[in-house]
Length: 130
Image (cartoon, rainbow, N blue to C red; front, side):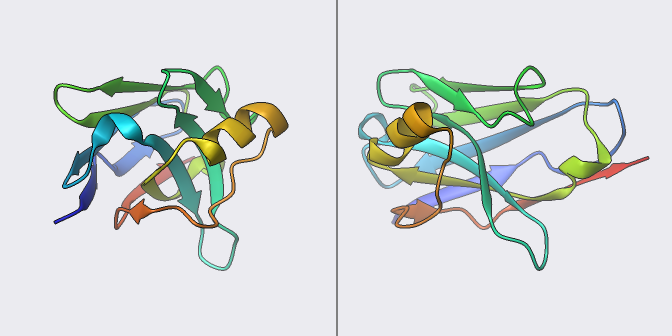
């Protein structure tokens, strides 16, 4: 059974921090890039970060310098440390697993698309108050 389970969301004041986790099971973790997306109701799902199979990373410009992605292969868990949170960061955050092509494309072109991701978690809600 393939599972991606996000955790760590909640309510935080602007300027605060949250650490999200994505726990994976049921597939070969090391063969997949792990990608983080967020979505506000009525808006497109946007890619914000990914960590590729070679350990390389990518961040959307709006989160660069504030968010840090990391992977623990032994625990099959990817974390997203979010610091200096802003109200604009309020969204449901999703992790997704996929072969490396889309994360590689983000690294090359600066955009992480949601199309065709192999596996998705169900999301965790992050609310940043002003």
